[in-house]
Length: 384
Image (cartoon, rainbow, N blue to C red; front, side):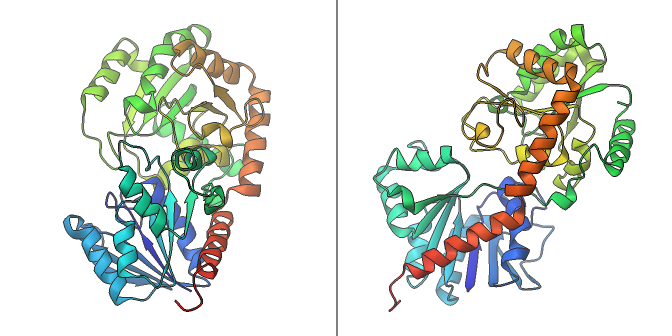
C-alpha cells in the first residue's frame, strides 16, 4: 500500500520538538514502512530539511501558515491508497476532495469533537469523509459516539505504546546503574524521588503535588519532588501558572526541583531516578503516553481517574488510581503508600512492565493500525 500520514500543524516529524503524536509516529513508521510505502507530511522546522527520504519513508514538510493547503495540493498530485490524518477532523473533508480515490483514517488523540473545537456541521463532514476512525482510548471513542450517530464499529480503539528496548527496567543491573548516575547528576543520591513529567499547566495538576509535599515530608523527610517539563513541548519559557508553582514551592525550595523541558530521548533514563511517578491530571486526559513510559521503566505509577488513564493503570494491580483528584491529601495518601510499601509497589511495577510487554509495544500499535488500513481500503468501492 501507499500510505500518507498527515501530522498536526503544531510540531514537526520526526519528534525533534517532542509531542505525543510525533513520538508515536516515530515508533510505528519504520515498522509500517517495512511492508508499505510511507509518506509523512508535517510542518517545516529549522532543524529539518523541507524534504528527505529515510529508507522507505519520505518526509515532506510545508510552512505552518500554508500547511493544510499545501498538503491538500500534494494529495492531488500523489495517489495514496490510505491517508491517515492525525487529530485534525476539520480539514479532512478538503483532503478527501483532493484524493477521492483514497481511504481516509482519522485518528483521535484528544477530544477533537468537542463543541468547543468543532461545529456540528464540520463534525458531520469529517465523519462522512472518514472511512474509519481510531481513538487512543475508550474514553476518546465515547467523545464521538456519545455525540454523533456514528456506528461504534467505525471507531477502533488503538492504544499507544513504547519501544521497550529503550526502557531498561529499574530492577535490572543496567537500570540500577543508570538510576545511580541520574540521581547523582541531579544531587538526589540519598533521596526518595517523586516524579512529575508533563507540561506545566493547571490541567496537569503539578500544584497539587507541591501542596501535598509538607505532609509527605512529615512522613518521609528525605523526599524530593522533581517536576520535569515546560510551558509547552520544547518550550521552557514562563507563564503565570509556572510563576505560581515556584511561589508554592518557595518555602520548600530545597525539596522541589524544576528541571524545565527535557528532550524526549532522555526520558527513559530520567524516569529511572524516580521512586514514584505521579500523573496528577485534572482534565479528562485522553490517555497520557507517559503512563506507558513509566510502566515500561518499572516505576510505580500513581494517576488520576480522569479520561482514559485508568484504562491501562489498574488500581492496586499496576498502580494507584486516585478518584478524589482535586484533593492534595489523596495524592499524599497514594504516594505515601508507594513509598512505605516498597515491596508491594515493586510488585505492581513489575506487573505493569509485563502488561506493556504483552500489549503496548510499538509493534503492537503498528500491527493494529495496519489492520485498520486494510479494512479501510477493502471497504472502498472496487471501482475506486
